[in-house]
Length: 135
Image 1: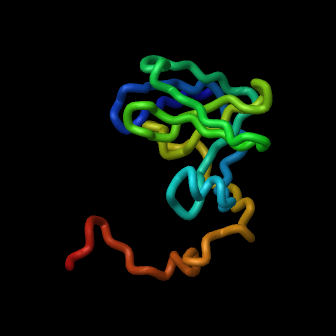
Image 2: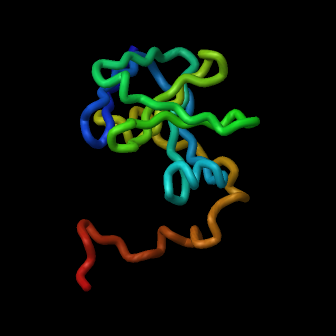
């Protein structure tokens, strides 16, 4: 088994995931775009890995959208996305960006792609900069 370590932006919450991920998917649904404020969510999923909070568990808050299966966990101090357990404990969902270690797998696909933002068109063709671009 592999161990992965992660944290929130402010460092108040630190966690460890012990195990492997089966899937890494980029979700373009409206709810995930709202959650992230971006083009898509980037989440890894595991039905066998175990989540252990190393510090700051009391700062982890979870939002569940009524009448849906949609939920997200985040740090109450800085708002960073954090792992959560869904489907009555059957599925661990870990936002890839909250890992401090390299993601162990690459994204396998886009889901709810038909719901993508209208501005998300040929983003790979935009100029690329290693830092903030010049004025």
